[in-house]
Image (cartoon, rainbow, N blue to C red):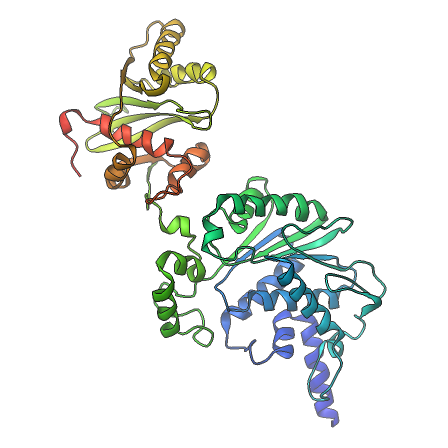
Length: 467
C-alpha cells in the first residue's frame, strides 16, 4: 500500500470512529449504502441520541430493514468509543438474545484475513474481549468488568448495572400482539428486570416493529412522557404517504403488495407501516374538538338543552361513566365527564356535583344493575347539597343490544359530537377507552362508548336525529 492509499485508509478509520453511519458503511458497505437515506437517518439519530441529552429513544421501522443489524453495530461502535459502557440488551427469547450477543462479540474478536478489508480491530484497536470472560450472554472488555449482558423475558439481570439498555423486537406474531396478558408480561419484565438495572443517567433504546398500542414501544412512549423524561421517536413506514417505498432496494412496491395480499391488511399495516393492529380496527377513526361553546353576542350559550347520561358500573371491574353535554342543532358538545372505578358511595356524591356544576336540565341514569338505587341517592344528595337546583333525574331500563347500539351510532358520533380541546389530557382514561375501542370485539371495557352512545340517543326527542 502506497503512502497515498495509507493516508486515505487512516482517514476512513478516523471518520468511522467519529461517525456511526460511516462505521456501518465501512464494515458492511453492501447494505449501508450512502444513498439509502433511511439508514443514514437512523444511524445519525442513534449517534445524536447517544451524544445528546435525550433519555429514551424509540425506533419503529419495518422488518428486514436492518433494525437488529444496526442495533448490533451500534453496540460495537459505542464500546469502541467508550470501553467502560455497560450495555444490556433484551430480545424476544434466549436464542435471539444469544445470537445478538455472539454477533457483537465475534465482530470485536474478528481476526484480519484480508489486508484490504477493514475490520473492527482496525478502527478500534484498543477494544478487545477480556480473555476468559467472553461467555455468549455475558462478557467483558479488557480493563473493564461486565460490559455486556444479553437477556430476554424470563431471563435474569441480577448483579448487572446498565448505562444503556437496548430492547429489540419482543413480539413474535399477531397472536401475541392481540394477547393483553403477553403484552402486560413484557411491560412487567421491562420495568422489573430491565429498568431496575438502569444506572443513574442511563439511556434506553427500544427498537421494534409496532404491533399494538399496548406493545412495549407504546407503553414506553406513554409512561416516560407522563413522568417528564426526554423522548425521541423515529417512526418509519415501508409505504410512504405519496405511494413510494421507504427503500426500493430493500422492499419494492411489488414485493410489498404480494406480502400485504398474503397476510391481511391489519397485520400488514402493523408490520410495515407502524399502524398498530388495535388501531387499524378502531371504531372511532376521529374525534372533533371545540375551543369555545356556541354563544350569542352577549356571551349566552346557544344550547337548546343541557343533558346528562349516566351508566353505572355493572361489575367491580367496570367503570361508572357520566357525561354532561349541550345540544346545539345536530351537534353535541361534551361539557364534563366522570369516568371512574371508585365505589358508589363516592360516585353518588361526585355525580350529584357534576350535574349541578354543569347546570344539567335533565339527567338519564340507567336503572340496570342497581342503577335505580344509585339514581335515588344522587337525587337525594343533589337536593340536600343544592336545594335550589333545577336538574330532573330520570331512570330507564336499557333493553337494546349494547354492541349494536354502539356500532349504529358511531358515524354520528364522529361527525356530530365535539369534545373540549385537550380532553385527552383532562379525561385520559375516558379518551383512551374511546380511542382504542375495536369495531370487532377484543374489547376489555365498553362503558365509555356505551355511555357516549346513550348521550346521542337521548339528545333528540321523537327520533329527530338524522345522520
